[in-house]
Image (tube, rainbow, N blue to C red; front, side):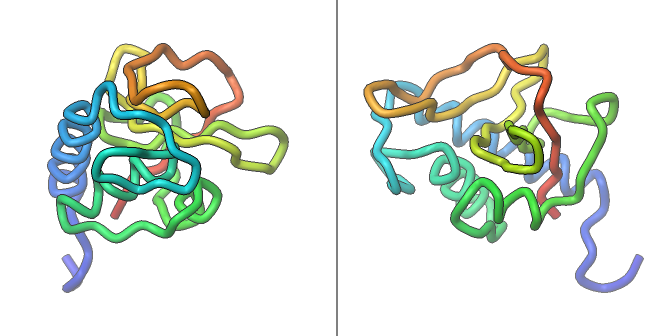
Length: 128
């Protein structure tokens, strides 16, 4: 393997650790533009969770999508990012928790929570 590249196993380990961090923020209030440690917006939660495991992500959901290795629904694993889109526009992100659910910071007036994926318009990305 070339230096600087992570194996699938390493990526999966980072993903499951980031997933646990996101889950530990359950109940934290949504805050537009917030990236923790006590308030989050959607991309702020993913940024915070991955930063804690030593992985760097850009700030917005769309930028994060462009930085991940895209994977199919059939190849998604716990810890992968789930990107909600309208056409080519990514507008929301969460962390895949397994069984069709994600941890995310939904919107103003809500809290970080585990929720079923509610749309078919999603793409998956693995943080390298």
